[in-house]
Length: 554
Image 1 (cartoon, rainbow, N blue to C red):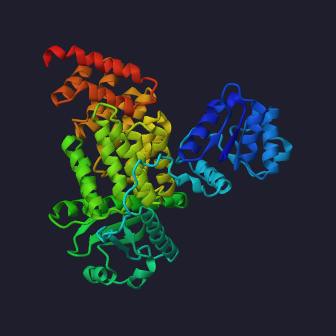
Image 2: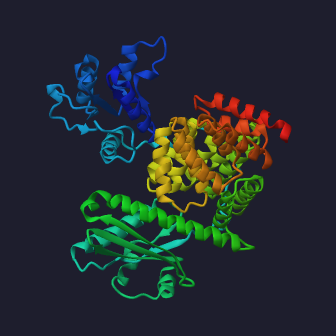
Image 3: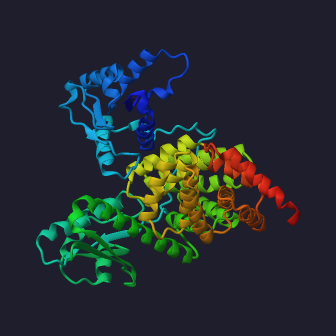
């Protein structure tokens, strides 16, 4: 069954494509007539799709209001109570639809963060409803089945966070509601990540507006971390200040101040909550990675995963091998812990990507690990975005998009989910959508330990769009953080050629060779990471030519 039927006039096809791609990025099945195969009966196929769609999105424009096809489709959708219309430009709708609530999206050009688009998307989701098929594995089952899984009891407890009631320092009773709402919203946002246990506000309510002993509160609640905060009006702004404290030694791990104009508060409160929650999540992750790396002996599955995450600060053979070993250790410790299998799929996909050949056996190991993760943790964004990423890195782009999109849908405030979905969108040559996700990831996780990778894929998306100066500057920033990333160096070389700097292009290819790079492996990686980029073959030819030019110097 189709989720969304897109009704539009052919002259609006470029705008319709933006809608189709944006819906697909959310994981919806979209029918629009560009997908018709040769020989199919247009009217029969269209009518079937129209009648079975859960939502019919009609794009009204000056051309579509004159189209008998669009009018007929809108009429049938209205009769079936599946009509969700919007305006592509100011125009006079057919009189029978003038009283139907219609979204105004004349200005919209694909920005997923646009508030009018977000509201319209919410309306569409109400029609489509829950999609139970979204998480049914689309993998072939592995040839073998794992033995019956029994928990070893060694998964390890996730870190526990208690958020104390925020203090209202404004002296205005109206801000009490805001302070209380901030805590509730941050708790909800953090809880979606599944990477930390967040205590409910009722657990900390008795400490409102009173000094606390951090060790005592942590002990009473069984919390590793406390978040304290206050709200204060400052001129024309409202200021939220937060502080993260470790309960064992009362060390202050992180403090931050967030400001928003009072005039825009209603519109920006959701962004503010997301920013607080994502920054907080990044700090917790960094601390848990550091703790796991310092622990020498008997570690839990959770701690083994944190150790594997830390490996990606570097991106070389030793780091990848360390990540594989730690995820395999996590599975040995607790074989029924789903995220371990997702992380193993992710780590093995990096082995595949860097191997230089299409190793069918290794590719199947990746898919098997992903299959097990889906069986054990089908609801966890923490696992979904990483197993989706593993599909992308073995060249299964549609599966990669599907599961990373599902992670974003389940945890829209997760910088990790946005990051991995943005990478998948880049490889699938959907650069505008990729930039939305990657830019959001960068805002949510400014201190991301693999920021170099975020910048690399942002620059790649800009290059897909022919924005060479923007790509050039971002590539420099990424290379400064990780000078050995051969794929980015190769993209930088092609960018330099576009900007008529051939000597600099040769410099970057030479740098790849000096870091031990291999041309066969590099070109294989380019074919995976830029799989649907129309310029791929040209880029490969340029890199190979530059490589041969410096051969005598090696």
